[in-house]
Amino acid sequence: MDTNSGEPWTEMDVWELKHSMEYGRSFAEVAGFLYRDESEVRQMADALGLKEGGGMGEVLRAVSEIGGLEGRIIG
Image (cartoon, rainbow, N blue to C red; front, side, top):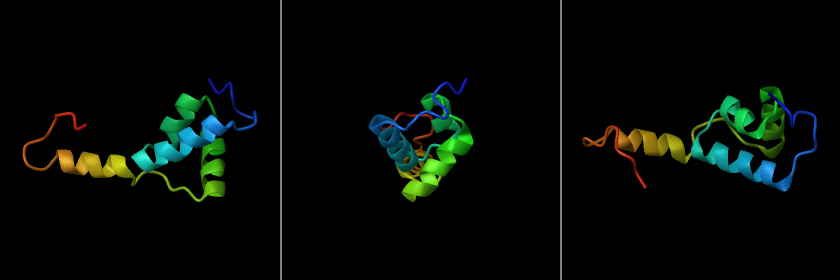
């Protein structure tokens, strides 16, 4: 269901992409909630100099596994 694929990117789409990459989401996840093809999301991320994953979400997941916090929500 890629209803937005091929359509121009809105400011909100770009904002969502940037913040999703900071949080550590995958291109597939972002493509899903932006209703775009994954390759289109990868292409825009490349154009913006964004990398897949490795953002704050990765840090939070790593920290949650330390000190008995497994399964608890942080934030």
